[in-house]
Image: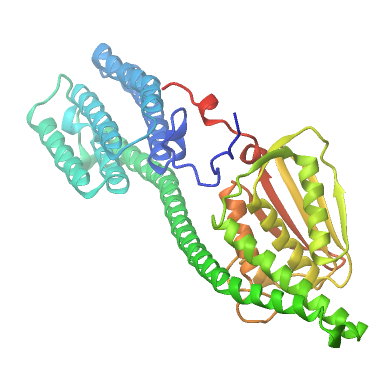
Length: 448
């Protein structure tokens, strides 16, 4: 059965896959923070129970309180398996996790002093977490429920009464517990809200990158349409020029002058080259025929790319092909065009020879192109691959690297550039071998 190219792997993982994909989303990472916070709460509450019951001599209903803590532990252990099976975390899951923590806190407070327990202010932590993690409707639901829980603790006293004398200042145990609760809530807010804020900022940055990528891909589509239309328009005049130049070569006026005949032959060769370029554009666009990717050997593919570029440009190229034969890939025209764009830029910038080093690093194809030119300016290095940004100073330039960066990104790879200390620049292309491996969708499809 013929092979087909592997689907693009350049899209960022959205975290909706099965397995541990939920841990890679913003909500999944926030849920992990809640799980960690819950373990800290269980440990702190166990310590508080031991101190109050054994150290202060206040008899607490240990069995019900330990059952509540055991329930939190069981939830923390079993919930990840449920999220892993679903493959995603929703706003509802975050809301239910906060409601569970609120219910456990209410039960523990009811059993250990009710409204007179200074740790009643831990409800503030729940409200702040809800304000950061949840949508507006869910936030107000948490506010209403926490208010109801505080009112219930005041209306329905529990089995334990804690003495409170705030007028005694720090000598009063209630004031000491209140101070401890304040420090605890402040520290947890700084640590966990800071982490959650970083997660949300990373999510926003990722969304901004996706929007930028969508805009760039739309720009590529527009350029492709313009190129295809221009190729259609140029096909007829180029064919006419080729015919005329072919006729001129047989006229006595040109055959009698060898130098003029050589110029006409060179003109016809250049016209034929332009026709080949136009034909390549039409083939890449699916006209007049679709050229499917074909399986080949990676070592031979690199050798053929280098030979083809030398033949096309008549420029020197030093190839260091460190890839051993025997690695099967699917050769796609996009890879060829991507590498040719990088080599063309290096050849234009370098007065001497261009070097291509091909090797494998950690299941990645690495192609490093070195030149002896002036190198990249700091602004170019910071915004490599941005359209219409070029060091050549001509309008409309800078599209080669822009297209190459997008082709590499579609394959799950990257393109990076740096200046060499001794002069010149190095552009490094990295593509995962998985994106080039032969792929049979029928053979690789797993049952759900």
